[in-house]
Image (tube, rainbow, N blue to C red; front, side, top):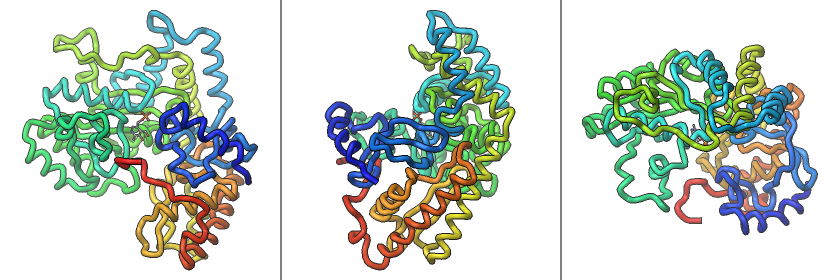
Length: 435
Ligand SMILES: Cc1ncc(COP(=O)(O)O)c(C=O)c1O
């Protein structure tokens, strides 16, 4: 497998685009040196790069492409809308149609506002919570990696560039499944916290009614309970993790799977809060999400078709089933090789993340790099094992075989040293202060 064309493009990307990518998680520094492919096209669960390599891909579009690349019913719906125009000086009827469909999907969504990125939606939720409560501080879950590229979240990551120092005190953190850490925050910041914000679940499931307790504590202290469903929405369940755990957030945010890669996100929730951004409130107005492309209609048409598809097909059941097949198949190979302490899989079947550990059994970036290097060689583009609806049994089985081959080298590297098998530098964490 050759990466010559990709390697020739790399300096050009960096010359023109800061970071050489429009999302840091897609950056070269997240892939083995000289093995970071530039993509030409995708079809289903496969992608094809500029060198003509073909990969089975996982976590496509940063988990947005849940049905599959160029998924025909969705493409057809978006294409049909393109022919009708996508942006007008007044709202298009499709904005209401999409909102009605979304409300049926997510029962707690009494109102919804669409936008383009998840970061817009979570930032909108924070703005509403601040406006409603008159408080500034937000409590976010420290165990969840990303809520927004905006200052209020980035200030918590240790990359302070461009963020005023004064913002630091506005974002507090609590631990998942640790209700005492939440109680402590409210005790130390009385009447200061506008909301608690978290994903309903990432790798660990909520224990001892954690989500319900968190909501109750927030409400007892006059704060809002916000659930970020960017990853869980239309993946855990078509109605999101709030449906799985039978909990109604005050506000929740969706994106990713809602557009199968097309740009659409949603801020949804209780009328009482959402109306602050409306024209019917007696209270002080909130200039909520308001962007030129907020209601661009091709993405709304795609989202409508996607919701319909979920209503007609058991998409999330398939994601869970295929993820389970992948997990079990990989873990069987891991056990065969005796690597249980070194290569792990976490998360729900529909959203699997793997962990790479070195000889000391601690998380290891060089070993992650080695696994990526070997799995790329074996035809996988897999920064995680997040499945799509397009992964067939055969794709999953081929992936298990590719992982098994990769793990044989991984095992040798554990015994003989990772440097011997790595062909380039190690990857680096996304959140770091200096390059
Ligand atoms: C849980 C969560 N929230 C918010 C976001 C931000 O969404 P976007 O990248 O569309 O701005 C992401 C993106 O990865 C996410 O995973």
